[in-house]
View 1: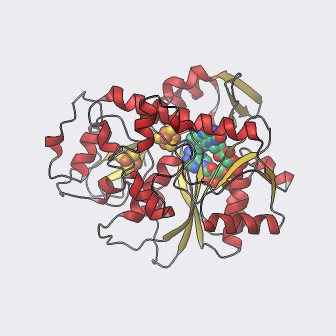
View 2: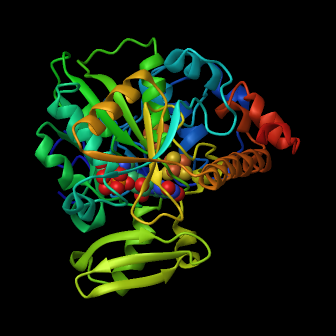
Length: 404
Ligand SMILES: Cc1cc2nc3c(=O)[nH]c(=O)nc-3n(C[C@H](O)[C@H](O)[C@H](O)COP(=O)(O)OP(=O)(O)OC[C@H]3O[C@@H](n4cnc5c(N)ncnc54)[C@H](O)[C@@H]3O)c2cc1C
Ligand code: SF4
Ligand code: SF4
């Protein structure tokens, strides 16, 4: 198959329908009355705001992921659609989503709803060796499958030629096959739309913040869903500051390495700031500045570093090599963490004061940057975070109140 949908759809692929920035300004009126694919095109694709989360793709025959892009195969005139509704870059009513998930409006402005923050790592050193940071994510997902909390887990695997994709795993032993981070944005959520479900399955999803946000919007949506869907009962959110554009980044890598020789990638914290490419020939270090041009433009307006809408959020613990930072946000998260410790799958330590302070600072910094970037964009910025959360006003005003 050399084009999206070739062989699967009766109409030919229209290569010219990849979205290009046309510099078209957003005008509220233009979108009046449309909350479907047309509005998605104008507000998200044409403004280069797509995160590639995959939530809109493969629900209908018109939108498919293809080599790092979402491709439109045909126009759609429907006045409203789930593609628009679920997108993390159309209207986000954050307070409502937080209230629906946690029963709390306007939580902690620094990192959202937080029950506990811990340093964790998978107990088994062999498993840790397979993981990106310390294996807490894979250990928790495998446990949720083993204990029947969920029937399946939607994960991301590195597909061919470094192109990541969503995959549903039902066997706990296979969770570790997806360990490791792909820093290329992955249309993971398209697998939710693509898979065949009977409607009774319970699912865990591991995702970056924009994917977790799309899932929260899906859960809150009142639009009828004609197809069977699994119930997403557990969300494990990863920390994220940016993801890369597949096309230009893979070309950049291919000029330097053979795709099949790349085993994985990692990013070193400041002051080093390097992208480490692990190859069969050894580790190659590239200055992070060389890959900045490949960061997706939408990441500039992303306010969420710690996956604030997840049950459990996991990232790298800076300054303590081989440990994860783990934030417990819900009762279910608390229970699963408790079981993982009880069964000796996870090691847990307290976070040090300075580590916690650093985490809060980094999270606030991302929010502050996003608010400034949104303001710079002017057109339609308010549409995405609408109403604008209180912390955004405080950060914009440079108030110290938000840091307390
Ligand atoms: C694009 C991206 C940016 C990140 N940026 C930061 C950051 O700035 N700071 C920080 O502390 N941590 C960041 N992380 C998280 C970090 O890389 C680790 O995933 C996290 O520390 C968990 O480590 P682990 O060893 O527990 O994960 P593992 O046990 O190795 O599990 C990793 C999980 O990540 C999932 N995954 C891999 N690639 C993707 C992807 N592209 N999209 C969605 N899910 C994926 C897999 O399904 C797997 O379940 C980022 C991750 C990604 C994917
Ligand atoms: S951000 Fe996600 S839902 Fe929105 S257009 Fe892109 S892939 Fe689709
Ligand atoms: S920074 Fe935000 S928008 Fe960009 S990939 Fe990460 S979660 Fe998605």
